Length: 514
Ligand SMILES: Nc1ncnc2c1ncn2[C@@H]1O[C@H](COP(=O)(O)OP(=O)(O)OP(=O)(O)O)[C@@H](O)[C@H]1O
Ligand SMILES: [Mg+2]
Image (cartoon, rainbow, N blue to C red; front, top):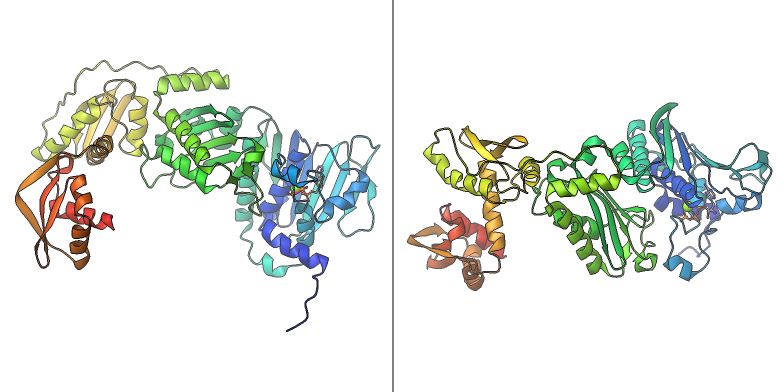
């Protein structure tokens, strides 16, 4: 065994950098956070080659005094906290005093800064013995060049310039979303990519995510005791194939927290198809002492003291917003944003009944039954496309208007005050079943005994499951019993889903029990 010896300082920082500095975007995140912590109102970011060659962040914040410059680059030196008590209620982005030291261990770093009281700025190159006078009106410029120049192995993990730039743009987007009061510019290889004027949350969200997002989003504003949730939750019709448009902040810090994502997801559960992801920009605020931000190297995960309470609060706040009738919610949202855009004109549908003007095939009559429900119930949405429609029209008795025609035996073309709606009847059918099952969830379901039991060849697992879970199955409205050494008989199914393939239904139930 070799003897134990202390690691050299540079190596310690390089190891730390392994956690903090994953790619140019992580450097950018740290630099922007520092600028925000310094009270900047304007932050300019210049990148070259996706940030690998150069990242320059210029701010108009409070600056760093000459004698503090070496400390800014030193490990475990910070101006943001000085005790455990401070750490436990930290409200700044930074607190470890480690970011710049880590970055300086894997790139060439130079800081130029001017603090208010000094006649001119000072510049310090990491590694240089002393600072030198420099020209700068106010604030700080941090330049990070040649990332991983001294750790070539890590350099190999970097992706294309375009990818690294995209990550940097994501970082800036996230930070800018949380701080609409701060103006940002982003330049890549000399080209201006973003210019964000200082504004309010709604306008910033629109600048970053587009008109479509804001037009489809509802305003979230909820307070419960020490918890506050604000921001925007997009209607289901705006759902995306990826999670890219999910922005969650805790006390202004962007996080990817499982608990929060889950709570939001749950709020959309009833109105969003499983393969789609909701879009939202949500800001949770709470007493900094009630949340631990010191659990992840990139600070993107947090730990809540009252995790359950936070989950419930977020879930209910978002769900309530999604369930509210659109007209009122939008008027409120627009009023709150102080926007000039008029609220959508909203005329309740005049049609009192569902009329179908085309002959329909017998195969479709079953669905039509459901169609009537969908059109005349205050039914909730069916597929993402209809989800928007149904929510939009949710305030009337006939959310989807009235039907005009049936297309290809599966679609219903409907009309209402807002225009034409195309409804997939299969999906509508499923949706209505789901709603019925849900509302009857805590009641004993009505049971449909089968005149002729349906027999099917069962696996050992299915036989065992039928026996072990006979009680549960009967609570659900199924009667499934052995009818031979390798056979099960279905003798009853819940009325709500009668008329399907009973052996398949039974199989699915048995599989679900395990
Ligand atoms: N843009 C800036 N303007 C003013 N001061 C800055 C700026 N960037 C860094 N500093 C000073 O340098 C110190 C070290 O910065 P660094 O990012 O390394 O650590 P930190 O922000 O304190 O903590 P963390 O490691 O969690 O980011 C800060 O505490 C701050 O005093
Ligand atoms: Mg920092």
